[in-house]
Length: 84
Image (cartoon, rainbow, N blue to C red; front, side):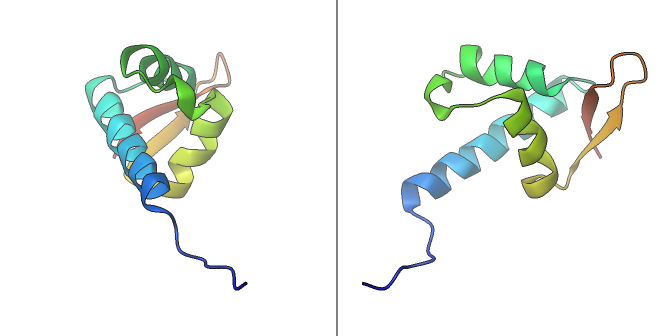
């Protein structure tokens, strides 16, 4: 059986929703951290079953969201996100 490299429609829909939700949150609250984003998505946007962690969001943003820039906070060492 040949393996297909196509992405499933549900997986694609979750990816697109996650992109939209992150961009909307960062636009509303510039200067937020990955933990802030995860808290908002899991608790306020009811995305608890997506398995989101601050580490996953930290890897997700540079890979899929080029319009979201980050700077390193000198006191805490955390990435601070804002739209470019």
